[in-house]
Length: 195
Image 1 (cartoon, rainbow, N blue to C red):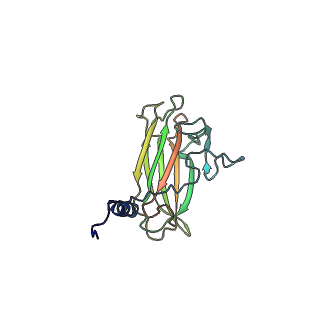
Image 2 (cartoon, rainbow, N blue to C red; image 1 turned 90 degrees about the vertical axis):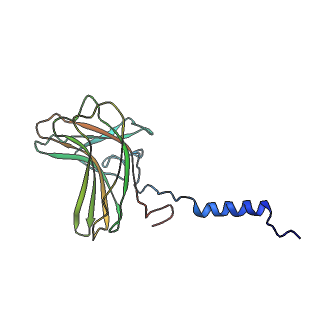
Image 3 (cartoon, rainbow, N blue to C red; image 1 turned 180 degrees about the vertical axis):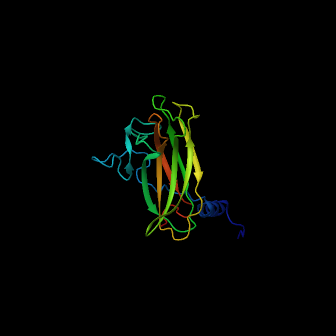
């Protein structure tokens, strides 16, 4: 009798082992991350809340729709944005990615900025936030850009975050527009099938 395992048994054991050590992929936490599902009225996109001057436009990188965010032109420093809320725990960090474009017909000017905010909330409201300036007046127009960053750890007391994609308009400047598409938020503690 042969005491050495057959090559078939070794092959099966290697495949089974590979399943258990394969990297776990994080799942996008956002609903409708590509802005493809329109809502009837307000909000414009299913799963997304909004404020300021916002709309839908032709796609930037994916599908049939993208999110169009225009400065509110309210006379002071102000923001227009789409945002989405999801649960979080203290210490949790989020990897945020997405695509954007600044059209040449409505560029960022002066101190106006394209921004992505991560806002941490407890039961009483916002307790802190982190703002990422992804483009300014020096950013070339009519070019697709990708952003990618990791948030700071959520502070003590956090029960949810708001992820916001928007435009901050400086008073006295022309209304800028930023187009967003394929915005994703993932967390290493949330893998496929968890939470």
